[in-house]
Image (cartoon, rainbow, N blue to C red; front, side, top):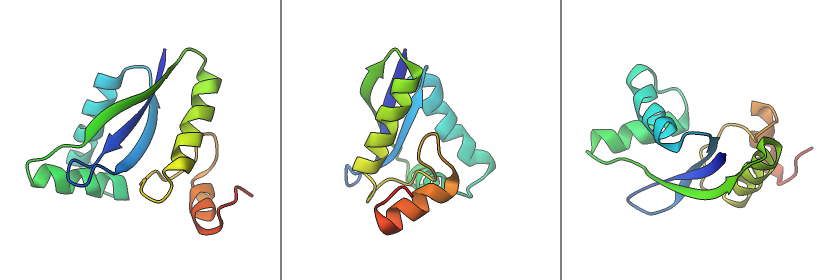
Length: 109
């Protein structure tokens, strides 16, 4: 099973990150753990700021999908749907340049 999930800001309830995993609990812990070592991305900085204030992001499972290819498509649709608030650095299956271009223009190519 593939789980498409959102990390949500506990303060304003906005979706800040969309991801895809086979193990939601382990992936959530990984998001929290990775900010101990580095805070380079906007997502990592956001999580670190929450932890510094004794808060944690909320995780919500949005979709459960058996097919991995279908999960990637759904994940990408969710990222695009929440483009104004997410801190993802790439569209699933694309390069990191693509989300910046998409945010700027609203087009994929």
